[in-house]
Amino acid sequence: MSTQALDDEAAIRSRLDGIVEGLRAKDLDRLRQVYAADVVSFDVEPPLQHVGVDAKLANWARVFAVFAEVRYELRDLDLTVGDTVAFGHGFGRLSGTLADGTATAGMWVRATFCLRKDGGTWLVAHDQVSVPLDLRTGRGLTDLEP
Image 1: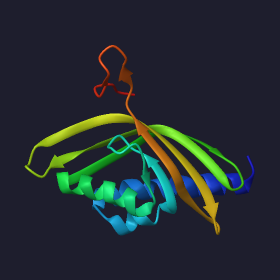
Image 2 (image 1 turned 180 degrees about the vertical axis):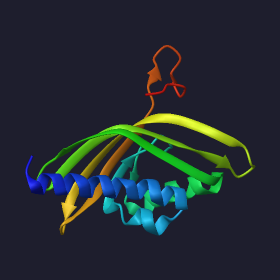
Image 3 (image 1 turned 135 degrees about the vertical axis):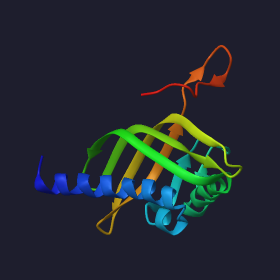
Image 4 (image 1 turned 90 degrees about the vertical axis):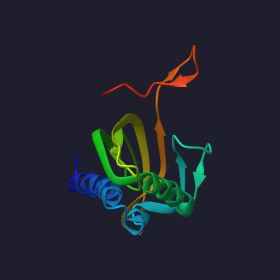
């Protein structure tokens, strides 16, 4: 792998660490720095898509309203990096303490990130979060672990 590719991968990992840090701090301004202005997000929460950074941040603001303390973990992240686009996948878990004081271990989700290099900076242009589906019941399986 070239030095540039290694530098880009490190920059992307740092950018995605910004999501973890922004969530833990409940800092929407920090999160805004991670996403492209025109990000399209397919999150577990309705609607089917959140279009634009403001819609993505509104989704995180709803999380912050539910949680008094937020913890987020991203693990097993595998990246493929090109010159101006990259994608990665791994597992994420949102957990913490709810506003009513209840501690929750959260659930593991599958996470995919698509990034593009804009003016030398890697930004998340698309993300998707999902849980496996039990086809017989139509319900998400939220008790699985990586």
